[in-house]
Structures are given as C-alpha cells and as structure tokens.
Length: 292
Image (tube, rainbow, N blue to C red; front, side, top):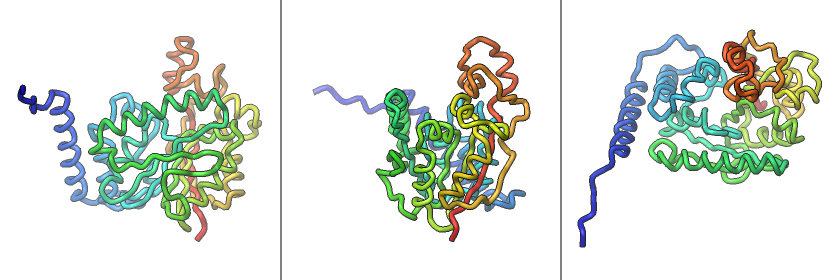
C-alpha cells in the first residue's frame, strides 16, 4: 500500500500562518493600552482593530472600509465582544468577516439568511447563500462558531430568537423589505429576538425627506423618518443617530438608483468614473433600543 502524503499543501501552510497571525494579533490586542473611545472598553476596541485588520478579510472587502467605517459603526452600536449578535441578511459576508473573529472567543454570532417572498429574488438569494456557506466552511478556525439560520415571513429559525439576543444588526437591507412588504413583520421579529435593553443597529441608504414610497422602491433610498416611524411602531425607541456613514457627494438622482454607485455599478461603464468619484451611498446609521 502506498504511503499517504501527510505534507500540507502551500495553500494550507499559508492559511495556517494567517490564522496563527490573527490569533497572535487578537491576543496582543486584548492586552493593548486604553484608547480614547468612550463607548467601548479598551480591550474591545483593540480586539475590533485586530479583527478589522486580520488576514481573513479579502482585499476587495477591505477597500470598502473608507466608505463603510466598520469600527466606528460597530462602536456606535455598542457591539461588545462578549455579546450575542444577530446579523440579518449577511450577503457575501462583508461584516461577517469582522464579526466572526471579534465574537469568536467570548460572544455568539447568528446569521439570518433572508427568504424573500419574491420567487425571482429568492433564486438569486439561494445562489448567494451557497457562496456564503462555502466561505464559512472553508475557514472553520474563524467561522466555525457561526450559527446560520433563516428569516422568513417575520419568523426566525435555526437559532434561539426569543429574548436572548443582545444586538440585531442590519446593513443596507431595509429597502428590500419595503419592496417585499416585509418591513413591519421583520421589525417585530427583531423586537422579539432582543433582550430588554437590547439594540437594533440600522445602516441604510438615506433618501431626501419627502421621498415617496414608490421612489424608495425604485431607487433603494429610504427616508430616516420612515425607518424611525416603523421601528417605533414595532416597539423600539430611537436611542441615537450618527453621521459616520454620511456622504454629501451622493445626489441620489441616478438612472439605476443607488445601484448606479459602487460597488454595484449597475450602468457598467456609463459614467463609471463619475460614480466612482462619488463613492458609496449616503447612509443613515441609527441605534434603536428595546425598552427594559
């Protein structure tokens, strides 16, 4: 019988080295000196820095930090490394790459894949979630503790979601739920999932005041007033608003709505340089609380 080849491949050695480097960075971060942040502990601030700069993040995703401000956003929401966090509709896992290592040792990360009632959208979502599953399974040292479930018709499955979650986070998803007629059912589900005092963190493309509901559906931009009104109707209280993800260059009047801008570039090469100079959309960043 031929001997088995036990020597790791170059790819496996590279991955192992990257994971060792990330573990060392997280350990060093936990011992880092205090920072100037008032909303985070020094340890959490440093752990988040290590997760954001870790080798598990793709270069393509890292390039979006200039527009998405992940550290400032998660600090604003108050996400602690020991919390139970539920991310809604993670897409390709842009925030998962940060949240998974950050929460790995002391917290929990649930990911809720969104099932759209629209058959055409659901087919596209199924392909995306297969890619997301491959991403998680490829690096179990980073993503092995992530629990993936489903949000369907305002109901969660796959993980506990009845008053046990510290944070529910959604990034650029609300316009889809408005289009699907699921916004209120989803907000009620988030309220039920959260502990009393728990946080709903919302980042969403921001429309000009007075934008109609049909314009929202067509363009992807949502007014802050709409989000606040519907969150309050679900029982939430608005705790704070941040301009960390604002973009005054975004005029919000494009042929393909928000999808004209990066990273989608729905118009392909038409006016691409103009849209690249604008950058990603102007966004509201809102923190809601479930009353105690």
